Length: 98
Picture 1 (spheres, rainbow, N blue to C red):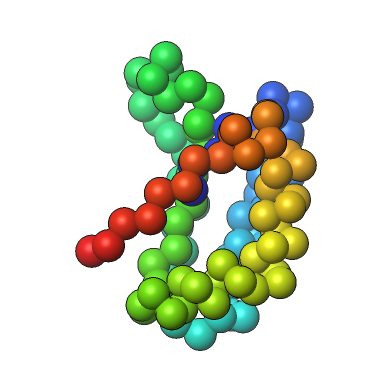
Picture 2 (picture 1 turned 135 degrees about the vertical axis):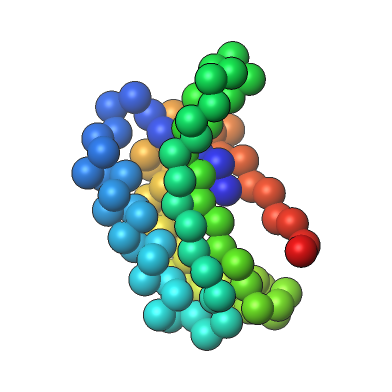
């Protein structure tokens, strides 16, 4: 997921979201990995403010679906929407298979 946080969102607030996302690995069996990174691209016009990103690696599709349907995911998703610049327009979701 790529996020375009509102300019007023402090680093500490972003860290709090990161910390909550990390806890999902303890709540959902089958989350293999979690990564949270800052976009460091020098192509700012193409980045369009999507400067923060995170992703989960799931054991399989069933784990992904359990993550998507979980109450904890829904709650943190709501907090993320509150902190991004323009609601859902500031969230880019991308699922890939490897």
